[in-house]
Length: 562
Image (cartoon, rainbow, N blue to C red):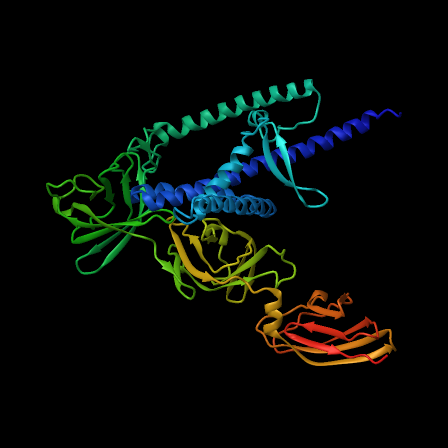
């Protein structure tokens, strides 16, 4: 038996380490994916049951969870979605069977309950809540692409930094690396401490400095995130309005002399009533105020009045010196208003600070399925969002996001500019029923969301597309070798609205019970709407049986004479 050379051993060890690192990275991504979906489910439940003060917290959680999902590569999202879909079906069937076994009593099957069980079950198994205490992670086989489950040592992986999780080398090498990392961590910690000391020293403080750490506010003994305020809209009795950006002030009232534009400042230490001051004496005559926040949180609307004995929900004062009581306003909360939902065709202002102010129009949203685009996998679809917009718009600043009705976000695959705007292309699992979607952008000046909603029908399958669009104008059959082969020539036209690229599977030929293989088709350009195309096929035949050819809803029988 030949001994393995040291070089080969080293190469094998390195290959094992590289693959082990890939498994580790997949395990971390899998847990991120599951935790994000559980967070979205919890946030949706909170939004439906909690008071609006907590909806900001839920909205922030959803934003972070969707950001985690957006950072996952599309290939991983597709694999993870397929795993969840498989177990969603199993759990749904199990719950429905339990309900039927109980005589059909109880509420109908709830999709959120199914998802909660599926994601919790998969997260438990990923975290090592298994018989052997090892975590499970799905991966695609490197050669076949089939789903393979790997088990990992969760305890070991939790204690190892991502980069060094499966470092290659001897024990002494690893020990050296561990010590170097320790020294590096201490060095970085010292630098960060020094920078933090500079930032917090009195010489570097300002009105916009973050507020000092303080205990999180509690509601029913539960910590909540204070509602973020980014915009103040004031309205007067004459109908005039003014909109001010809101900044957080660690010392209140702040020194606002350095701001040339009118600004509202929020006291970082006041939770209720909220307390704000403005940089100009503009409160006189104002009768209502609206406070807007980041993300999709609802706006708060107050009626304003001079100071009164009643405890207000909002206090508005002047930032410079003592406020004249006539210029102070107390606000009483009247209602909340959800962010408006626009429809395709509506225009929206997304960057009022640009010169000129930036406006965009959602022109339309189109669904393309695997029946229309043969490059798509059978379980995926592409959503095309067409937007009329300035040609030089910096789209990453606006975080264009496509939201699905189950709370997931679709992955942005690519963008395609055109003369008057841009087409943003998203990839998501194939829909089978009509589904509501929302496309939104985030304003960079306020962090507020501008959202369009619409209902999308699932894309038609291949047979439906061919039936609706293709017309066989003529079909001729000429014997090439009598009794052995035929030359078929089809003249087809596209009566639909989209280009069509035929493939051999679209043309079905049979003799008796036997389906004949369709010869490979040449690769002409796609058949455009209103155009014709000639297809020539050489088909070996049995002269004793008629030949049947089907394309879309057209079906022909060709009788042969021996």
